[in-house]
Image (cartoon, rainbow, N blue to C red; front, side):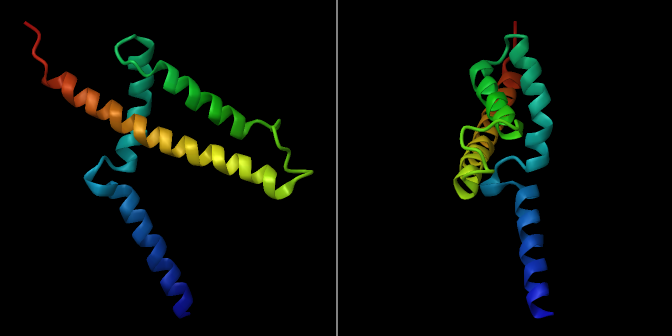
Length: 114
């Protein structure tokens, strides 16, 4: 019973940290909501995130694809390790790029066009 309470408290703390944003940065829902705006601004040529978005799309396709460089069926641990590495890189890239995009949006809103 005590172990379940500790686990519940740990997951609750993790959820609160993710929703509040780490170190004063944007929260996870804010970052996720920024992704469609970032894609739209990139396709319009307003934001310079084209190559980074392409790399993130390729990483997502690799993780979701049934074809792997290292197949899980034959090399279970190593097959999962390459996917885990790709997911970790993708998570970091999404966090970094959404923060960069949100800062770009804030700076763009401060510019007064005469």
